[in-house]
Amino acid sequence: MSSNSGLTAEDIPESELVETTSLVVNSGEIRKLGLGRTWSIPVNKSGVGSSNSVHELLECPVCANSMYPPIHQCPNGHTLCSSCKARVHNHCPTCRHELGNIRCLALEKVAESLELPCRYQSVGCPEIFPYYGKLKHEQQCRFRPYSCPYAGAECLVTGDIGAILAHLKDDHKVDMHDGCTFNHRYVKSNPHEVENATWMLTVFNCFGQHFCLHFEAFLLGVAPVYMAFLRFMGEDEEAKGYGYSLEVGGNGRKLIWQGVPRSIRDGHRKVRDSHDGLIIHRKMALFFSGGNRQELKLRVTGRIWKEQ
Picture 1: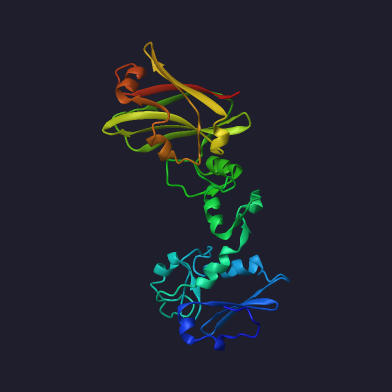
Picture 2: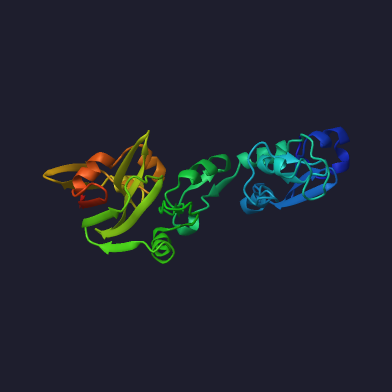
């Protein structure tokens, strides 16, 4: 479409407005026209629209997230994202008109020209991305919030490392320790009751970083096992700069595991199901426990070191 000034909604055939939405560039603004609705976006001297103004138009009125193709609109020009289209039962949340299958192709095209900062700019991310590449980056941005690593409940709390540490201590009552070595004793009166449940989470402050030691019981196929593993409270690349060892034994025997801590970006279940840790089968655990083998008594020792 030509960008001649003076063009109005009345100049566009109604059939054209039903199928799409048009953009008209005038001096000082971009006008978005669509069946009785006009949105104005300030433009600079070079004719480029304000990113903030356009970004507001690209915000879904239902979920408040950025809209990505396909962007839908009702016959009156109100837009919403494809995810929310099903949630509102195919009726416009603004005017209640039936949505149909009208695409706002013009707004999708405008989005292609945008470059926007990462949504985590306020917490340190300096990156700027094309609109359609921004979402992919944000899903992997190292400045995005961390999920709570406590696996005993489906906790939905997120935040930076400082906030997560305070949450673990205050809300989950997790034990916090300073030091790079540990010696923990795990006792269970009835070791035959194996459930998919976490037994214990302990946090260690070591080398100015924080590590989560997990110990739990679960079924490996049909075999009951116990597992201990370490997770790093930070990014995966940083986690690779550390190593750790775990040791358990009794009756003159011992098992030793040495590995690299996994980042808490990897979910607890993902680490557990990859068997990336010290795994002790129940019969061996009871053998280590000694006595009449009716009570689980395991002592797990270990240390954390910094790779050179």
